Image 1 (tube, rainbow, N blue to C red):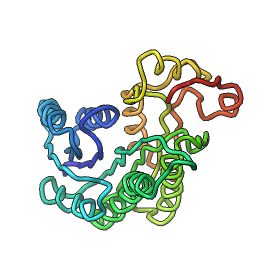
Image 2 (cartoon, helix red, strand yellow):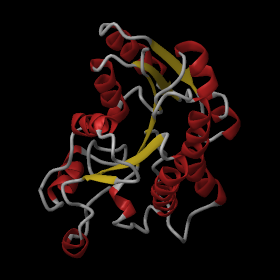
Image 3 (cartoon, rainbow, N blue to C red):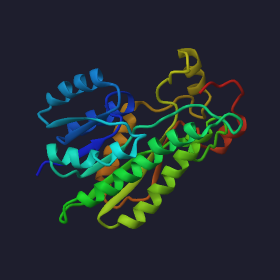
Image 4 (cartoon, rainbow, N blue to C red):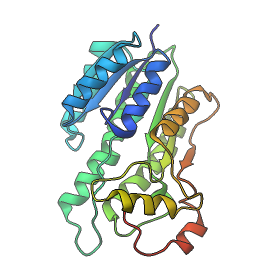
Length: 252
């Protein structure tokens, strides 16, 4: 039977690399996107060259009603899912002085509630004779708290807690693990120089590539005894030495 995976936010950036990693292994892939239809179409064509079945699904993860239909829609197209990668995220600055209920709930719905609902639906649809994997793309900020990204940090620490609790609740049928990337690709607020400065500020002097994260995803899929774990791929950014020594002015 073909193994199938759903990857949220998979049209570009880290999600794209994760999708390519699964295609190389012969998985059927459901590519979720929100606005990046052009990139999703192009990636579908690229992945199809591997001879695997590809489905596209558009959904707003901040809307729980939209999220509730994703897994069943994918199942109608590809068949049962064997792996779920919760990769999509909202990442905006807010602090205790300027956060709003809209900002808070947008982060929480996208980064925490959507993975919860998708994990719930994934576990329910998994055939009785199959084992499943959920891989949550978290953030090194789980261990390196940043008050200038208040809602985002709260949502990602919640995702790590969700990882551990669902690993316990869904064992032995479903394994649940997390990956915490550090500075991988520049965000929309950064110039190339600012991103380079951020990467050079971590203990190793560099962060991960999207392909390294994709390889870690494949490692988790194959590591049959691993559940409830967090893999930091961040050049040491989560370490106390970084938090103590990091210079002011590093743009994120």
